[in-house]
Length: 401
Image (cartoon, rainbow, N blue to C red):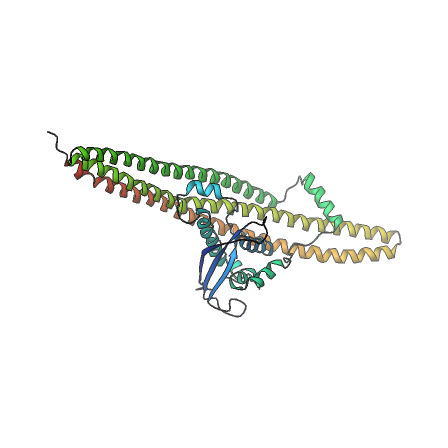
């Protein structure tokens, strides 16, 4: 499917829900979870979707396949990240959910965000792999699709050309081009941003854990107050016993408020930071790929120069047969070089636009995250203030003789 800009008024709605555990047949086979992926869209037309509403059953590895396919087929595009597979310990540390698995809930949110961002991308939204991922309802049809070899985009080097590339990579190029210098500056910035985001995520997770620990302590504090109130009431019913019991019950209520705040901070703040850590990795992977594509282009350019030199020598020595053979190699290498240059130029231009898009979205998302965080602190501080204020009448009712 050809690339297309996102049509004006294009609309997607995604839901990732209803996790179901699947057991494999063998004793040593690991179980896995599947999710219902519901899609609604108005992009119903030939070459796009056949119907406005779709449902498909997908597992985590299917999301991995989709992302890897998009990365392979769209060089230069910063493909949004999917959640890491091994996050159980980290998620459970900052989650208080006693119902459904925190890991599965997090994955559902993160996988939905991945689909939303792909669906909003001017190039990726019309990728055939994306359309098939959402549209193929029969599991056998989708499995068959995932088994097909991925389309290779880059130009393949010969074994000799690969040896030259390895040598260049080992010893490096002392004279960096302007594009290589720019990539290095971008890579350094992204690496620093990634490190800072990792540290910020750790600090926010620590804040969330401590808030939850405070909630637990407040709960125990409330039980202790209520216990004293019950004992006082067993001796004498009166305002003092009532106030003690009220403080105990309010403290238990406030513990749930702390817990709720911690859960909301995890969703609104921790997960946003985690998403941009994944985006930083995607940017660095793109830079590495562009460097390889530039290297391929340069190796083929050097091979052309060498072949032309060899042809000239053969002609000088009167070896016309050898010169003819070399000419055929020159033609083949010229075609490869032109293709490699075209692919690199396209990917490089795409990446430049993607970086601008990355910075725009980062600025918007971080602003929304900060706004949500500040509003969250105000909201829950107000909840706690109001809750404590309701205790004052009980306390003031205690009469001291």
